[in-house]
Image 1 (tube, rainbow, N blue to C red):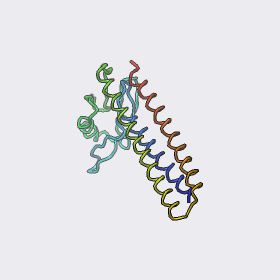
Image 2 (image 1 turned 60 degrees about the vertical axis):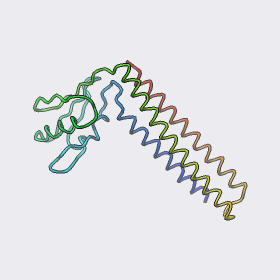
Image 3 (image 1 turned 45 degrees about the vertical axis):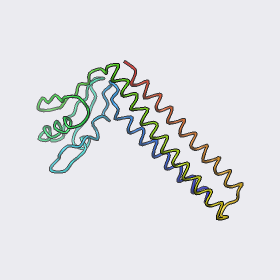
Image 4 (image 1 turned 180 degrees about the horizontal axis):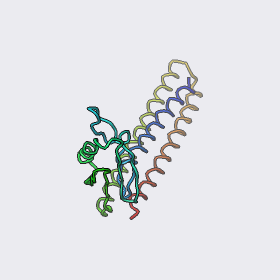
Length: 185
């Protein structure tokens, strides 16, 4: 019972950590990254499709993304999707490829992105703490129903706290790394 609960808890908090990593990939840092455009959806034969499934995405220069569609007829649709997205760059379409040139971030924009990163990290921490609360409630209920002893309950709660502490440390580490990336000129 306790091992199952710990396994479920670990899955939940790892999912929140993975979600944070994915959100961090989409934050613009002044460097071009494929992750900025991979999940943008464009019309592809009537169905919204991620650009990564429609084209090759490359970063030939540190501040440029090049998108080469598999089917040249979809170039316009990809361009429209990029314009609708919140990337904040205008695509340059030469008829064969789309180039996205990212200007360097201003100090003010860097601080805004840093603030967004902190918000995302805090959301991940809140999700982790909520998972801890739920696990502790289940342990208390199991103790109340005499499924586990009081000692087992306290030992399990210590294990829960250890897992939470480990993941909060990981979240802080991810945040520090992202902030360094954002603030690097």
